[in-house]
Amino acid sequence: MKTEQVIENLSIRFPHEPEYIQAVTEVLHSIEPVYNQHPEFEAANLIERLCIPDRIFSFRVTWTDDKGQVQTNMGYRIQHNNAIGPYKGGIRFHASVNLSILKFLAFEQTFKNALTTLPMGGAKGGSDFSPRGKSNAEVMRFCQAFMTELWRNIGADTDVPAGDIGVGGREVGFLYGMYKKLARENTGTLTGKGLEFGGSLIRPEATGYGNVYFLKHMLGTRNLELKGKVVAVSGAGNVAQYTVEKLIQEGAKVVTLSDSDGYIYDPDGIDREKLDYIMELKNLYRGRIWEYAEKYGVKYVPGARPWGERCDIAMPSATQNEISAEEAQILVDNGCIAVSEGANMPSTPEAIKIFQSNGLLYAPGKASNAGGVSVSGLEMSQNAMKLSWTAEEVDQKLQRIMADIHAQCQKYGKRQDGTTDYVMGANISGFMKVARAMMAQGIL
Ligand code: NDP
Figure 1: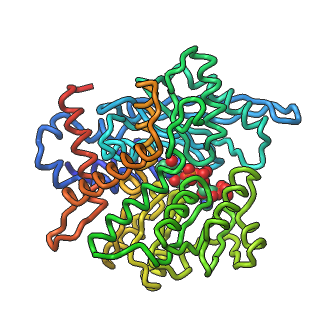
Figure 2: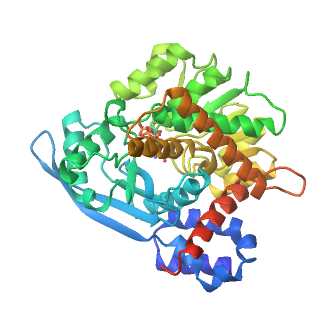
Figure 3: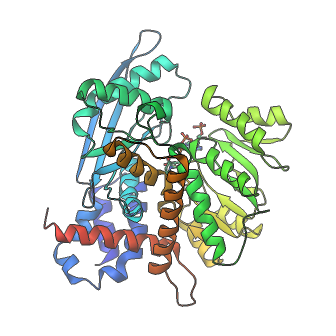
């Protein structure tokens, strides 16, 4: 494979898709050495078939706001690759959503899902609709209109959506309700459902908990403990909240959280009571993180991200490209030893280089945040069997899967000095599984 040429060709064919090209570039550079050991891959043009999504649906979503105004948004579903199982990936509702962002997410999801050890292909979907500032009724009408367009293209054995930014339990409930009404079946086509209608215990917790489990394995390679470490977390949504919950349980001290308006710094650490307040603020009242600063009398920095604060560990859990090279350098200078990504692609390529060249333990999201989709996979299994597992059972399976992903990273990302390149490990391991499955199934 002539990597630079492939990337250039994709950039020409898909101009104006910087996030997609960024994600593809990282993976292609990682897999180049193993890819070149397999001439049969090149003969089957595996690389283009793996980079370009199987298909993309795009549609107009028409809905009526509370004032009676008719509104339109764009809706998308990217079915990227189903070589190892049904398409699987979340739905994002955010004003910034466009094809480039969803294509990068669907591409990443394909490798992440391969790492989970479960049979799931990769997909992603979403809309430029923002639930922020909308009433419950408006969110419901939007979700129903979105699903009216999407439902024909998904199904329990074909494509199983879930949540992502802006799509939590409330939105999944509305989406699933409409899906059932249209499809007239109850096979659990979405994951992240409420417990009363087929959801799995531990699914809300899974991404955050899984990231902490992964982090503990990374620290273990250097005989380091999580207990007592100071951690900077970004975001204040699903992933951030349960990351903080598990960190508190493990005896770490979380000093920051953020939203798209700014971040808070709490030098005493966020404890259980403060976390309960955040969950109520964000999940019930849909408030802003500055309200935490007012309530507890701590620092709030508007329009900034938390990476300037001193910490031992950083766990970015908001969105893509939220750690720049400058911020990465500040983290390093302040003595940060590990970065474990809860969000998808939160570190820019330059930031990753800085982490790796300074010897930090650095886990890319496709490995460290794979706990969420893993428990989604377990939700699919429970739905198919028409039964539910206990929280302990699901948590144990989640822990086993995160340990397995860590082991895969070590196996495929082993450096000469015995340390692990987690980017290389995750990319090669995920790629080899998908590649073998594609080769076995012929030219499609
Ligand atoms: P939520 O919508 O629950 O929370 C997102 C948080 O990030 C909010 O605090 C939000 O602030 C903030 N945020 C969103 N966009 C931006 C932005 N452009 N700039 C700054 N802050 C932003 O989403 P999740 O917690 O589910 O997802 C967070 C990340 O984790 C995403 O990258 C997602 O893809 C990834 N992920 C999620 C999984 C899941 O199971 N939910 C699984 C694996 C990965 P505000 O409220 O102001 O918008």
